[in-house]
Length: 212
Image (cartoon, rainbow, N blue to C red):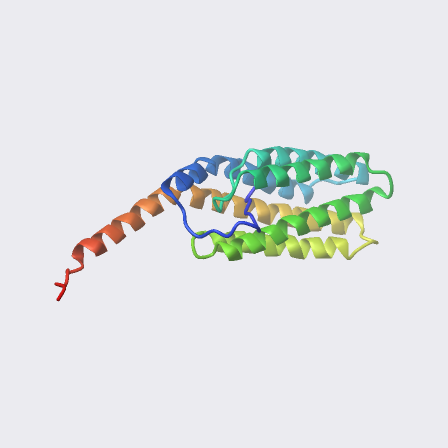
């Protein structure tokens, strides 16, 4: 999952941070592929409410585990990944065990989770826009999640088809954006090397003016 911190303001990156972030590119890729495939499946399976509960709960637990082991893409503390991962796992388990109207529980659980993640992504992307090369991808992801969340939370009478379409669309787009982000994250060291070379060349070519 693309994790950014809405608390820590990014001001600069060190080489160590770039290398650490880049090493986690494969987690983003796997998570993105899982989300993309899951989103596609929602459109081709004749769901019952019970089946949807099992599917959504299982996927949230799996994605939560991936998130806990991921590295924030903005260089913030890994603690934030653990927090969001635990929230996702908790919501996934809650979908299974929560008593009440099952479809409404699924819609509200996904809605609040997406609102939490989307808000964090939006704030994190904006605060890191000067140093995060792919901040636009993170921002789009956050906006989409927030919009889907508001739709789910505003429909207490939501139908099974509407819930499936909303959840499937969100996961498909989120998965695609994660795959794009994974590619960008993998390129971070090369970006830093190129930027360092450009700065070094500019410094070398700048004439020195005598003092006095």
